[in-house]
Length: 184
Image (tube, rainbow, N blue to C red; front, top):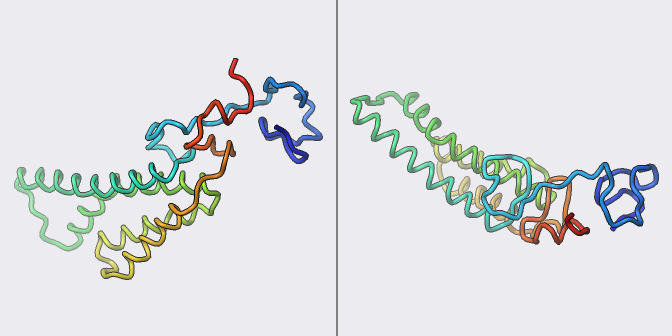
């Protein structure tokens, strides 16, 4: 339940806490209930929390499909209004605008995945940067695709940290089981 360095419930220093009787099973007054990450896609639009491997992969697939649907939908809308884009700059702006929702989802999922596996948040940028380069045609070819897949696999390969950390509960364990006390 508690270790020498800090209380596992309120994250205060164990020796200088002064707020919590560590023999009591009830939470102290300084306890902050961690984010509940047990429901899949409950916090899909936020950068806080943790997600498991399955939710990460599904979010990436949804982001790619969303990109093509937004691209197709906006393209059909522009065509129906009689607007044509003839310059390369206009096409880049159109593509980038259609890509923004997908990039947002990929970035949010990657950051939450780094919270779960305790790796640097910078690793969440690898798939996003590669997707931007490929979709905008900046660096075409097989090498960026392999780098992007490697970045996604790196975030996918490790299971999340057991129990609760500062980013919330483990998404694959039942929430009540991780709190180490009976819910009142």
